[in-house]
Amino acid sequence: MGVSGVSISNRLVTNLSNPALWHNTYFTLASGGLSFSMHDARDEFGSAVNNHVAIDHFQLQVPIYRERLGVSVALYPETASRFSAINQFSVPPATVGADTVNYTTFYRGEGGLNRFEAGFGYKLSENFAVGYAASVVFGTQRTATDITFSTPGYQPAAFETRISSLGYGHRLGFYGQYLGITSSSDGIAFGITASLPVDMGGKREINTVTGNTLTVVEGEDEGPQGNLLLPMELNTGLTVYFNRYAMLTGEVLMQNWSDYQNFAGQTEDFLKDRLKLGAGFEYAAFRRPESSLFTRLGYRAGVSYDAGHLELNDKQIQTLLFSAGLAIPSPVSGSSVAINFEYGFRGTTSHELVRERIFGIRLTFNLTEMMFLQRRLQ
Image 1 (cartoon, rainbow, N blue to C red):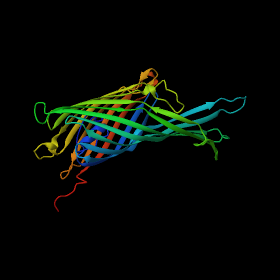
Image 2: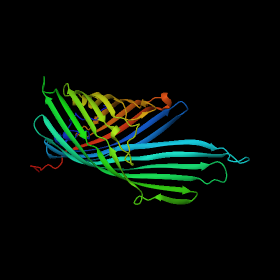
Image 3: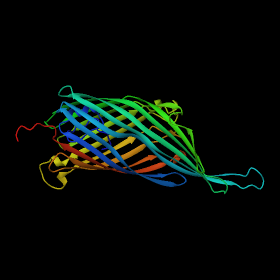
Image 4: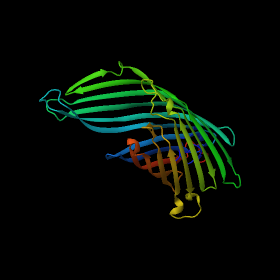
């Protein structure tokens, strides 16, 4: 729906956005997802297309005290980095009669951070709940440069840098609701989360290859150690339930990327504080008593605007994204499959920058079962 769901409580599906929502766990829930994205990038000189398939997340929610105390364990990506660039250069001859040296550089990188998180949500009263989650944030970023020469007599060369990072995170959540405003099926809900800054220790390794010779410039245990500082994040949302079928939700997310520090402990001038706005709508037709093809599905749509955390050439890189999807519940249990489509734009071709068109498909599986129940009758 273009939002994370920080204020949406649904006991039939898992929710990663707000630990306080885990208080409403009634069934044993498990979810996982796959995503495919395509980025069509263009600038004033050319274009390129990048496709990527990834595992979105895995989460398990278990009720300890049904609809009062629930716990969650999850593994999901926090950041991802993929890039590549090819450039061709030439060096003029240093002496008269010498040849011009032509060479090509292939610069690429991949990696990112993952978060393994465990926490709980607890219901304080009929209308309020709180939650807490602790996590381990870890990952590796790899960058490499390959240099090949078209001029005979020069051997190819390669340089590779790996930075491995590890840190510990904390997330707090609050959820409040007021149901039955004008009828038994309407209401309003509010949610907010705070992800505290993560101080991550890092190790760097540098290798070079010239011809067939590998040289370790810095080993992981002997090279310099640094600290990455991930920024604090605040996410807040408001949801209005019109009835048991329809709801409207909106969110505001803020991240202070201006406080980010790289491996050397330095801030980056091109990083700016991020603001993201989103709104979404859901119509759960499968809850209607009628039986037809269209009333067996749930319909969702939304839009989000992301001011971005990058400012390049005095221009902030913004993203506008539209979302639409279907929820397909199981006819015999509370399990479901959700499919979501995304289309949007990022950046601009002005200021010597790049504009991207974004296409995305996400498939999520929700397993909902009654487990850990003591049977009274056999």
